[in-house]
Length: 70
Image (cartoon, rainbow, N blue to C red; front, side):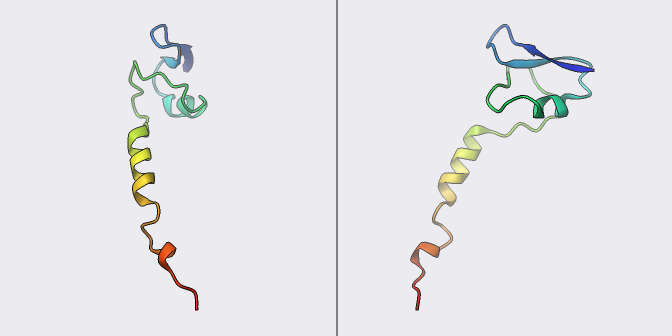
């Protein structure tokens, strides 16, 4: 069974245990409180830089701002 532990290096939450329940454990930890000093095998961790870049580059590119109503 996997369980949450506090990282002694960064103070955020990491994990201990067997490693088979990490997806569930990761999902139950508040966003921004995950330790990344140790890997989370099997968990897809979204990149904060990727999310920021994609949201800033996609805003206003659909052309709706230039739409003229008749």
